[in-house]
Length: 105
Image (cartoon, rainbow, N blue to C red; front, side, top):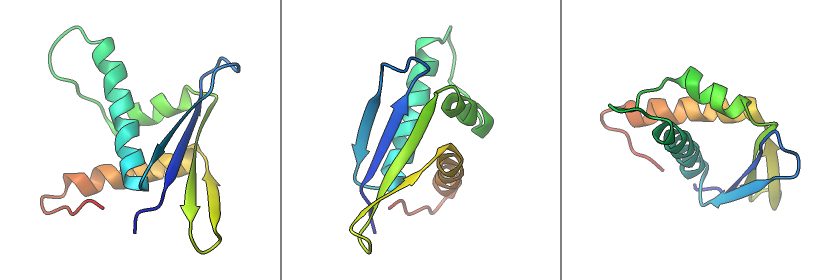
């Protein structure tokens, strides 16, 4: 079941904060990958974009805050999750899309 997810990002500059909202955790993890790919394409000198899970983790770690709020209907509110939770979900997301018969939610 999709759960509304809000990503909160704060770069090292404390005066700048951004948030994004998504209809599901899966869509949020996809968007994080897309953010990283966009950054890579801006700094690319040519060829295909390639990266690993460690590269994504390093991307997340460079922010002073990178967290998610996930809506849980049972409590009628949002549960906060930090960088480590996000890293685990990104790994699960990438493993799921790598499966030949994957059924994304």
